[in-house]
Image (cartoon, rainbow, N blue to C red; front, side, top):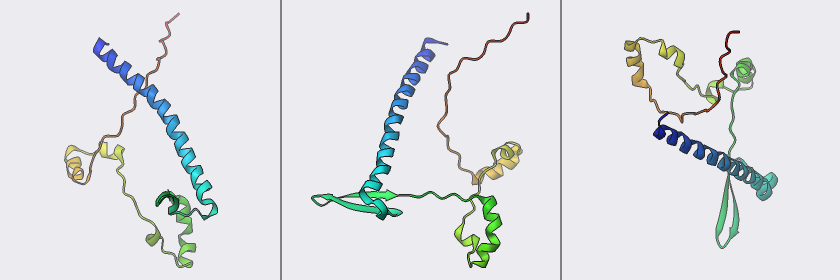
Length: 140
């Protein structure tokens, strides 16, 4: 490893340690934020925007979000009971089309060129791991 490369790794590692400390602070802030909803609104906390006056015309706006995920295997068993209850699964759900990366990589260049017209690619944050690899065992 060159001195320049070593310096870059060392700088990244120091930043990673700082990020770990910051992560704990952020986790604590999120914990306090959640607790604040219960303290300020109690059982009147509703999904969406909740407001409470603070002082001098200032208001605190607390947005309570709920993420809902559907278990598609369970949903498929409920289509008939839902229909009997007057609920159209198509009206209360959306289908999200996702790329099967493994299948995509097996396409020919020509096939990929056609499909690429419908794909927007962005880079995710890379991950870095430093670890000691086990030493190879020597034959006895």
